[in-house]
Image (cartoon, rainbow, N blue to C red; front, side, top):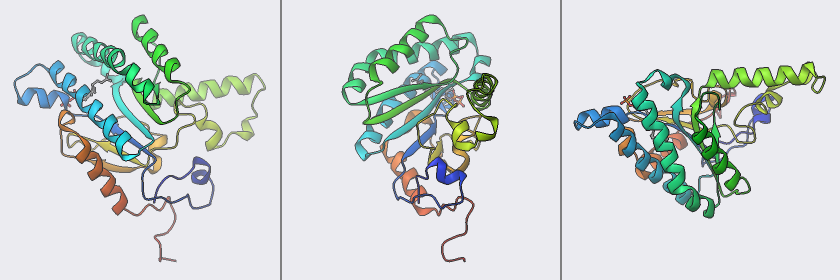
Length: 254
Ligand code: FPP
């Protein structure tokens, strides 16, 4: 039921089927509402959101998941008050500073997806440090989408590809889905099998819009700061109960 290679997805062969997801992506939504319901400032909701992220990474490692991608700051989040943007930057810094050594020792490879444009120098430095320190790890991929938007990512990829074509390094006629995907921030990662959004909202919000083309969408009625292992397991159960067809026919329908 899962884990198609992108080559299989772009071709006419049925993808490889497995019962366990290879890659889970999460839109961690509802921090603000969680805080508001308790009379706290929104920043407290985000702080609790980081705790939920820690729990989720630990749970994902425990259950044997290999790839987890979380959405923690979108290119559209710049529209929020500057104090909230700064709070989110501060939380990324605190998370990396506090958890980097442990994650590195646990064999976690950290990747930050998104554009570096507009990010302050201290964040850039930290992001660079986290990626370099964990670059050789392969036990678990933790991808943090920060300053990320799916359309922006595709535009950057298209421009990078156009430059290669102009330079004569790539033939336009050779570009297929697999070749294009190599220009995306997720190069080398399998497409997500499951995309979870918490907080009862039913949108993709520009998250992994290329990569999630065949992901099973799971919308959970829990606010992100309350998310934990049981919710991750629930999402995987829902996924396992579904039949993925990748544009083909249901089994037994032919
Ligand atoms: C959406 O909730 C959440 C975000 C915009 C940020 C998610 C960030 C974290 C979970 C913590 C940061 C983690 C790192 C590693 C930086 P919302 O604020 O839109 O909630 P609302 O819809 O209830 O207002």
